Length: 382
Image (spheres, rainbow, N blue to C red):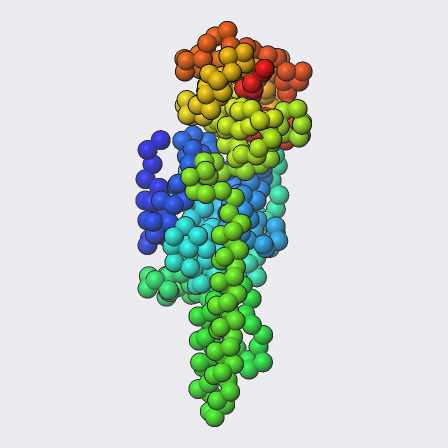
């Protein structure tokens, strides 16, 4: 799907960093190939929860409480409410900029954006919950207070010299007291330094204040340095493996769970793993669909190598579905998905007699994310 992601981001941030946008596009990977998964539905609580858990917590490494993170997501949704297509790339750019963490994607560390986020979140209430999309019930999201993203945008504009610097919503620098404790993570070092400078001029002869200011700045720099390092170590996977947005765990059923954990794509995709020392494939599908992702040709290489080295081995192909919708239709869909995978494997050179359709005891998988339930498992037998 051809899409000018940078142009879409620049509808909201005129000087958006092209390098950062490209890094976010690479992070999202195959999620952008599917129209549905390339957009964010702010009325779907499961979707916004996924953004909070997988992007804000896992990728950005944020440790704020859920209410604070939900408020930031709701604020982006409120800002984009007039946009019919809420592109996931734009949403993630605005969230990373809001928390001053564009540097994770190769941008400049956003201290001004972090200061705006702190002021906005202090005035914002927690976002309201949404009904589950699978039950087709939606409720409006409580928008983040206008001070939230507006203040962050104004602070970011002041740092870049854009017209937003003159906006009345810009956050004024806090005044520092001589005995003030080190600033919290959301306070920008630049704001602390500016306030201390004013006190130095007004205090006349209080030379010790300069040393106190220097100590505070050094403490803040040390804090941000340690936090940045911890975020790098906490990254879920390298950029080349971040093929999807969702990193939810595999189904709870131990008989259907691979021994190695891999990211589950939203919609169609293929994940290669090992089970009991043998290669296996898990092919995921879009809702209600049985078309096999083109990723199968690459992912199946290890399975082909194993079969070539073990002439007696065969492949068992088993289809599954999520619990939503009509049970009879779901059962037929599971069967069609398994048949589609068998046909695709045969096109890749697998001998038909070595690819066997095997109906599992339970084709419907519940108690897990629906994207993980819509799958076909290809396992080695013998």
